[in-house]
Image (cartoon, rainbow, N blue to C red):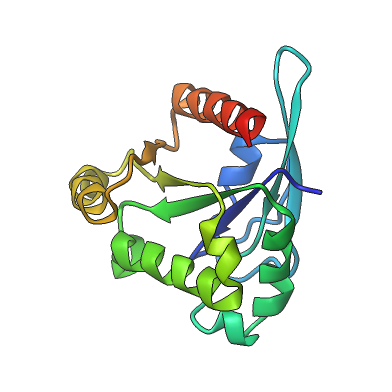
Length: 170
């Protein structure tokens, strides 16, 4: 059973391999993954955390659109949810709308799941537009967001430490 679950709007198969030993199929086109990827985060003290990475959720997933129920049922097993948001707004997307849509799909699928502990990871912070979007995003969601730049091992290590602490308290 996974301890935490990575949830994202678009398929971003580069996040899980950075934090765990997951080996997702990565392709230059969307929806390459048809099932969740399980990875294990290992710590220097030999502690381990299991992370499930579900493919990108689309609008209507709670109604079974696409592989919605196949993906969403994995959320039921996880103690902590991790929302990975493309803070750079790639492909003309608004990070705030993406987060709102992901939360909505989970709540409509099963209201209790929306009450689980969660963290928001601001991905692609190495891109120039991400900093501006992050300020607006934090203002709207009224939560601290964990910024991660694609080229920063320091950000990844800080996130892994936070994840371990969170799971120890849940």
